[in-house]
Image (cartoon, rainbow, N blue to C red; front, side, top):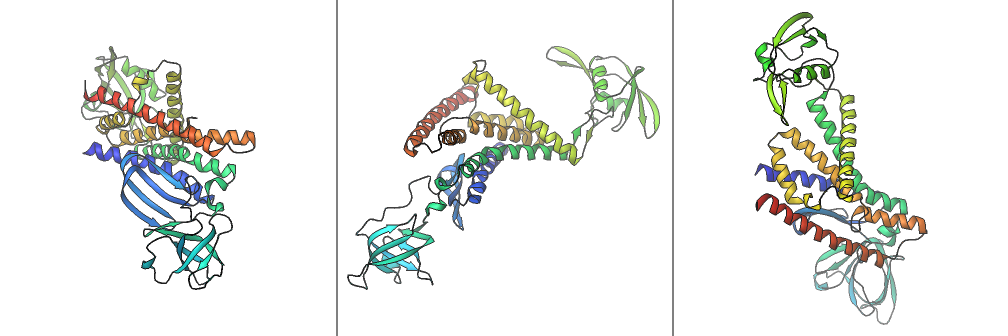
Length: 420
C-alpha cells in the first residue's frame, strides 16, 4: 500500500507541475483554459472556479489543459434555431439557452437569423414578443451557451490559443517540460538542505553503530590529520587509504575538541564487484548551507539530464534495446524498490523521473510537446502556420504510434516482472 501511495503521489506531482506550466503561461497569454485535468478517463472529482473546471480523472497516466481553440468551438447555432436569451443590466446576452428553455422563465425567446460568437459577438433574430422585427443583440465576451443544463463559456477569437503570438504559444507549450526541470531542481535542493551537501574535508561524518570506527572510538566531527603517518588533506585521501586496507590496522591521528588523539582502527573487509575493499562505517562529512544546496541542486539536475540524453543516444545507435524500456508498470516496480531505501532516495527518484518526463516531452515526436514546438519552428521559418487539419492528422498518427509503443513496453514490463 505504501508503494501504491508513493507511486500515485510521485506520478501525480510530475503530471501536476507539467500541466501547471502549460496552464500558467496559457492564462498569462489570455487563453481561455476550460479544464485543468490530472489523469485520463472518467472524472472522479470536478470543481469549477472562475473560467476553469479542475478535474481528477480515474487513470493516473497523464493529464491535460483544455484550451479554447484547440478543439472545435461550441455548437453551431444555425438560422431558424429558437434559443432563449438572458441579459445583464447592460442588456448584453449572458446566456444562450439551446433547450429546456422552460426552466428559464425569464429568458427571451428568439428565432435565430445569424450569430457571431467569435469576432463581433452578436446574435440577430426575431424575438417572439415582437412580430416580424429583426433585432441585434450584443453578446457579453464571457457569455455561456447552456445545453441540457450544462454551461459552456464562449471563446471570442482573442481568447483562443491560435490567435496568440508565436512566442506566446511557444511558451505555453514549452512551459510544461520546463516545469519538470524546475521541479527536479527544487527536489534536489530540498534533499541537499535536509541531508546536507557532501564536502571533501577530512572530517568524519555520521558513524554507523555496527562499524569498525564506532568500535575503535572514533566520533562524528573528528578531523583526520594523518593515517599511518601519511598526511591527510581531504576526505578522498581518507577513503582511498581505508579501501586499500581491509583487515589491516591503521593508526589514525585525529583532532577532537582542539586536542590530538591517536586511535587504532582495523577496516572490515567488504566485497564489491569481486574486489576486496576496506570499510569502517563512516559517512562522508556534509555541510548544510542554502548556497551549497542550490549549487548541489543545479549540479544534480545537470548530471541526470546528461545521463538521460546519453541513454537516448544509446537507444538511437542501437546500443540500448527497446526491450529495456519501462512504462508505468516498470516505474511502479522501481518505485517499490526505491521506497525500501528511505524517503531521500524516493525524493531523488522523483527528481530523476521529472527530468525524464521533461526530456521525453521535448523530443520532436508528433502528439508530444516537442512535436508541437517543431510545428512552431516550421511556422517561424515559413512565416505562416501549417494547415491545422494537416497538423492534426500528423499528431493523431503520432499519438496512435505512441499508444502502440506504450502497449509493447507495458507488455514487456509485465513479462519481465510478473511472468518470469
